[in-house]
Image (tube, rainbow, N blue to C red; front, top):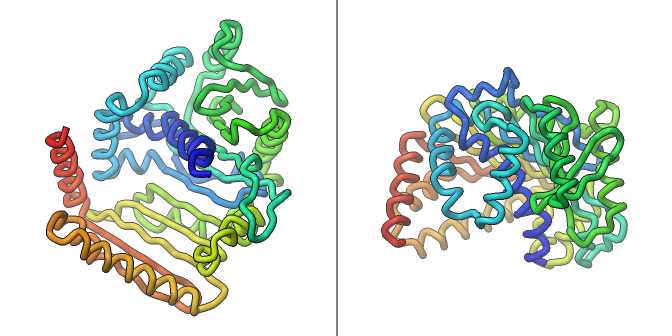
Length: 354
């Protein structure tokens, strides 16, 4: 299960981040992105989407912590990424003419599930899980489509046309240009039938019209204004998907804390970087139970760490946990300069261990 989830979610999400976060790693601090705002848009996410995460790269470019993370990613990527995948990504950049210093302002991820076969109490079939990545910025339609055609002719990538859009598949997933401002990346279970991918692509393309797009709740849309430089916002609607409920219910402990929804927002506010997570339940006792469990976990972690990692203990001590009726809230904030110092210290210690 974990291995398959890695193939479907972890690897494709990180790889899609190579089309966005790695682009962030190469961007200048102004993050021009050809005038794109980097703000969230539901277009490209079908109505069936049950979980969304959006990264505003333009805000990340402009934040102190984001700039530092950019430098770290730039330094570490080639040292950690397998050579074959690094070359594949480099070939993609060269072949498409994608300029990593200007071309992407933001990327949105959506998770889709086909609820067919989701039986309460049993682990659902992961063939029905797809991750959608919609990157927005400015792209060369001519160069990217020419790259796809050339790679297909040379037998390096598998090309297909859905609607009027040319798609190509590599180890990162299936990608294609919707228009000059939108790059689409879709990944799913490699064992899923081709027709299931085709049907999903058709559904995603239809969602580029507002009538068929994800109906984002107002509480999620409001997260974008939570901080002056909101970098990350995420929302999961558990009750909308029999698939997710089946995942929770397949484990007795997880079932006890199955929420209605969950949200996360992070960003920079003045000289501080802030994070807030909210979990909504249908019963106040569940919110109180999660708060108690979180407090216990934090206490145990601090006792295990002891004096070995004082910075981490300080961060844990700064966490604020509270319950508001049926909602559990956890908040954290730290000065951006302090986060940067901790990142630099962690890198220095890692280098010494090597």
